[in-house]
Length: 79
Image (cartoon, rainbow, N blue to C red; front, side, top):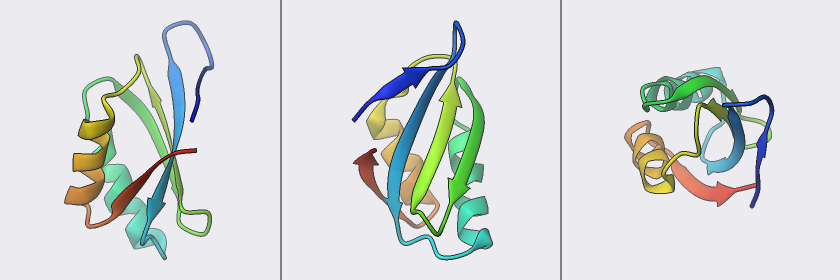
């Protein structure tokens, strides 16, 4: 359960998300997470069940959980 800093001012966090199975799923999750304040980049990979989020600061996990829920999936936790 780690977040790594890529460049000064950015934090990359990988989350495990269950239920994604296709590109549409990836888009739904990415769309919701992109709306969170401070998020600069989202890459969802359904086959791995992982979502990589780059943000200006560490994100509140409950906000991430709510966004993933809104997309219709379940946040398992950080990788």
